[in-house]
Amino acid sequence: MTDTGSGNRFSPITPDDHAGSVWISASLCLVYSVITLGLRGHLRRKIYGVDDYLAFAATVIQVGQVAAIMVGLNHGLGKTQDLLRQSELERASRAAFAGEIMFILALAAAKGSTLYLMLRLFNLSGPKATSQGRTRMFHWAGLAVLAAMAIWGLLSVIAVSVACPVSTFIEGNSSQCSHQFLRWQLITAFDVLTECVLILLSIVIVLPVQIAFVLKCQVVLAFAFRLPLVALSVLHLKFISEYTTSQNPGVDLVPALVLQQVQLCWSLMSATIPNLKSFVKSFSSGFGIQLDPASTQAYSSSGRYNRSHGYELGSVGKESKSRSHNRSYHDIENGQGPLPQELQDGNKTQQRDQESIGSVGSQDHIIRKDVQWNVRYETDQRKI
Image (tube, rainbow, N blue to C red; front, top):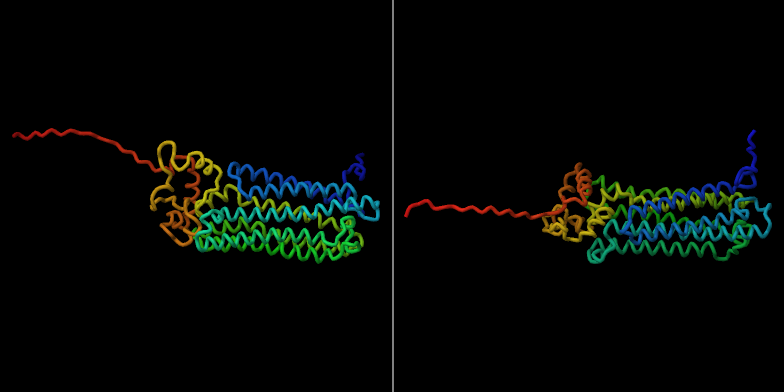
């Protein structure tokens, strides 16, 4: 008969030991985040931007955070503290403190990655973005939100650290590290606020643009995947409240640690969702930029002038059908120049966009001028 006792388990879950839940959540979320980063790197290869570097930094910080949590688990994190020696309790506390700091920093980097991607998609990050009315306003609004996120990350780290001895960090309000719930109330409030601002910013920017309503919804939905982070953040605060007033804080801290892993993993995944190729293909033809890796690489290798002596459609006159690829958000919004025909056809918009993007790398976007000469001689048959 097979022995199913706790001796055969890596981290058995008992009334005095809930560390197994943290092991599972931390390991799975780390795997998902690394896979997400690999997918992002594949989709954006050779066209990496600031948003990709921030996503990479957030994932690296998450690896450090998971490592710190696992060190704490090896020293009794997630267990009833009465069963731990004082030296083990101090090591677990230091590891948990390091994990909290890296958790906040990784969240801030993921937020910044999402915002930078938004500015890039909406063509609000280049030199032209600072020279036109509404575009300039959105550009500076985006930078202001980015600064607010950086300040939130810095102040959150200070709020967690100030007047809180590291050696007693996980002992709840019974330790010298008091008012932990108040600290996390402030951190959570601004965390939720910045997430809502991100989504509202995407709505405000895309609303006046002259593209199909379905395409607008698709753009907003891609960034609305961050909405579950609001619920996760509030739920995390609830578990912090229970942990700080608990008689057994070592065990009651576990749900908060599990929520941290899930929240950070979802934040990194939602920062990558707008990079998915199906979204980028349908989106890029409407906002004047091209983020599809295949087309971007083809463009950079051939330049404005094709090897077969044809010019790209965007380099000819105003009647060019693909002029939207070379126009900024400001031009499209204010109707400067003729709009592309595919943006005026209602229900046929998405189909034409997909056909336009799907033909990248072919000769469909090249205007050629073929000249044929036919020389004929006519003999005058009239008699003089």
